[in-house]
Length: 187
Ligand SMILES: [Mg+2]
Ligand SMILES: [Zn+2]
Picture 1: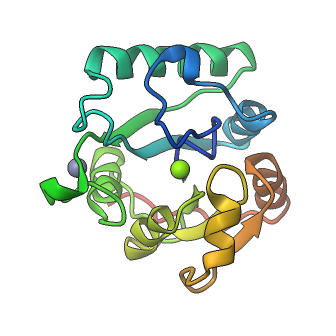
Picture 2 (picture 1 turned 135 degrees about the horizontal axis):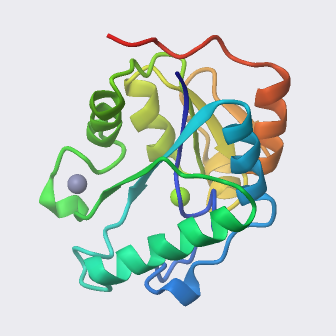
């Protein structure tokens, strides 16, 4: 099975320093959903791993997060894209949970749920903590310059081997021309 793990805000949709806290505020980055459709066509399972501390901060609740993700799925469908699963951490840093990136908990859950090793699985993020979380579980890190990506790039300290692309569409274009070996295999 081929898999790719994507951050959500700043990778698939425009990010906001004030959080994405309603379906109306969820607006896709041009080309991102089409890029996901290309991944699907190339046989990739597409999984999202997203920190959503706005829940812990009570900026929005689970009903609203579900509505946001319904919009995400519906918008994806219009271009033939499928998101196989959305994993999210609802906690704040102060909760000291195991799932909030840069911790690897969500990635470990993805590995368990899909029964795959994440070794060699591409992971795409716009923040350092996205790449760190993936790197801990053997993923190949990709930074996109959308969202917080430009700032992340300028700050530096990226995990070794991080590749940098303008946006998800550019990353996917490069990935599909130079396919990685199949991820992990089942166990
Ligand atoms: Mg992000
Ligand atoms: Zn968490």
